[in-house]
Image (cartoon, one colour):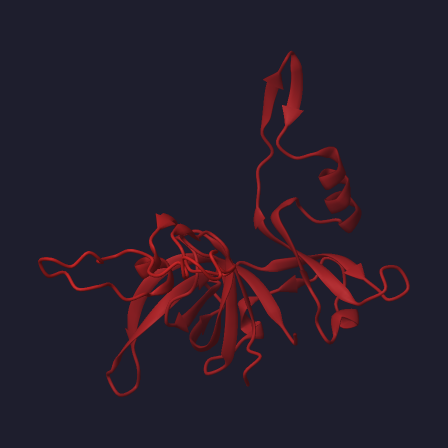
Length: 219
């Protein structure tokens, strides 16, 4: 991983290129990420940086007569040691030049440029319980009168031999709500003033979801 940044999915829109063609893009807001910790070979056995993203306000409430904060003491101490404000998200980047970063340094959207190819990871939308057609893009049977097979999972195996369903059989179940990555997307525009990156196509997650933008592995 050469470079990466955390951002928040705003939604989708369209822009027009130099030829007047409409290009569907996803708008990602990536306010400056802050380096919270450096991990070294001497201490952790590998080189990486820990990055914080998203401001969070401390909230106090009473629980059984005690005042409790939404930010734990260990987390407060962790950010205090780095000398930065408490952030909502913490992620680790294994960059090739991790040693070049310093604690407190900011990573901004201009690390990427127009025309670059990126991979974007996020938490996909949850679809609940889905059948095999929606979940695995399966085929349905005939919908004509007399057909006894419409949207069922299909054959479950022979009755006499092997008399069981093989592992991995595609069946209805929970769909979505898992980490996934969309690869080789094009960066259409980078706005440093607004801390916004426009990426061609769709990316995982709902509006407001956390996403990670990094160099593509297919370059």
